[in-house]
Amino acid sequence: MQRIKKGDTVEIIAGKDLGERGEVVKVLPTDDRVIVNGVNTVKRHQKARPGPSGQQIPAQIVEKDAPLHLSNVMLVCSKCDKRTRVGYRIREDGFKVRVCKKCNADID
Image (cartoon, rainbow, N blue to C red):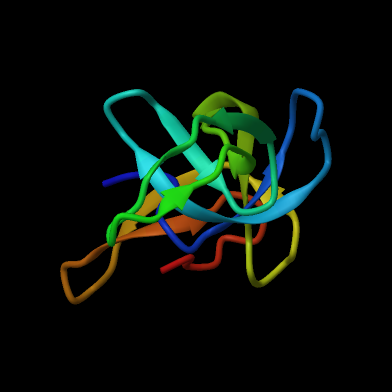
């Protein structure tokens, strides 16, 4: 079970975007990285290229969100609204759930 999942709200704890919060758009588990909406934005230059119906797509500068390492983000608990570590607990019905270490509330 992953500690951070798509759709979670996280806070940046290191780097140029320190203190900012955002929603996780994508998790890259093999690289231990996450993409957070509106955080760590970079510019990439694209060459001119042919389009789908023979039209030319011009060269442009595109802004996109770059991945962040998992160690640089912390999950924000929806109950206490604080950044927290993640623990696990098995409920009475047998499901394993993520737990906030600060307020002991279920995250899932």
